[in-house]
Image 1 (cartoon, rainbow, N blue to C red):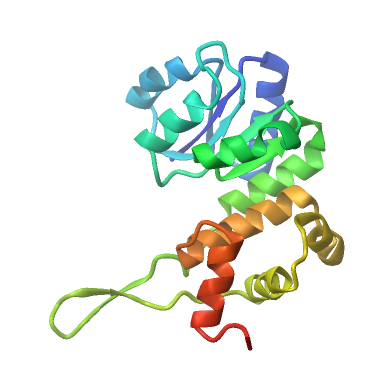
Image 2 (image 1 turned 135 degrees about the vertical axis):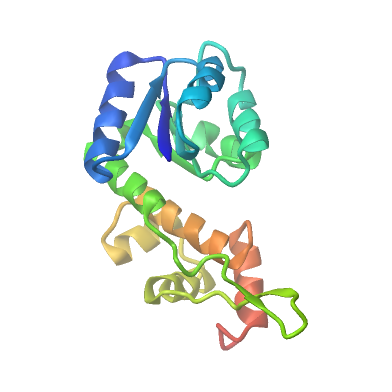
Length: 205
């Protein structure tokens, strides 16, 4: 498995790679300056575990890089790490398939915490069982205490900033926890999460 950092700014690319090596010691971190370099790297490297992609690259236009990665590797987590303010590009990137949008101005500790959460093992996600007739059936996902807490906060209408303040974590880390919750439940939004929670007795109303 390999983590790919794709950023045309050498200093930022090296900084993100250094953070990842601290977060996941021993992991193979591959640094690329253009998305077009990925194909060659994949022939000599392992399967990608995580993509960290700069929003603006010399060989991409708009969200084309995000769309290409998600089309080719739909199940590999993708974090866009950009100098562009989230208010200008986050929704656009998320709609294109990005799992998390992280501003480069967030700082090393905040970026590291968000990437650490993305790389954390989620052993309860996607469990399968087999019926007596040999058919695969999906087990109900097991939620952690934090994930149940998040659902309650979503039900209370709290924003990401408000959740971050209550939990004492960064807003970027909140976004990663929500991404993991969405994956666990097989949903794509807050609205779908709350619908799932109500249909499965996770909320009182």
